[in-house]
View 1 (cartoon, rainbow, N blue to C red):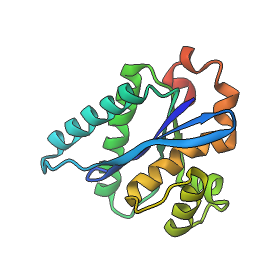
View 2: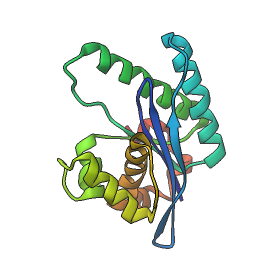
View 3: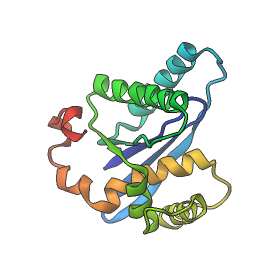
View 4: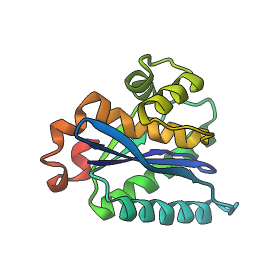
Length: 171
């Protein structure tokens, strides 16, 4: 089973694809979508195209997206919400179920504690996926998001119904 994870951001949107098969989990790919366009509509269009390409390339059974958390800046929260909306729209078009996961749940599932810092999360992702070398932080976060439903077992419980379910069933 393939899970595609996203760490949504308007300037740097991390992504990570993992596969879980026979009790083993490995990374298929990861990266960061960093649109060079300053105008918001153009930036969102580029993110949409990249997300659509990733969904079509990896053909995930589930897309996992890091959910929103309260920010002091309304504008920052609004920008994150727009990117989240783009990802949800692509998944709706492509018929891929989506699970939006709060950041503390991702940290708890992957690093063992909902208040884990970035370093602890990165270390856990590297250990679980047996990755070496330098990884972009947004890609690490996206891989952690993809790992969350696999580690918590929510993927295996729904595995038989994923392809026949609507994205709305998992929100």
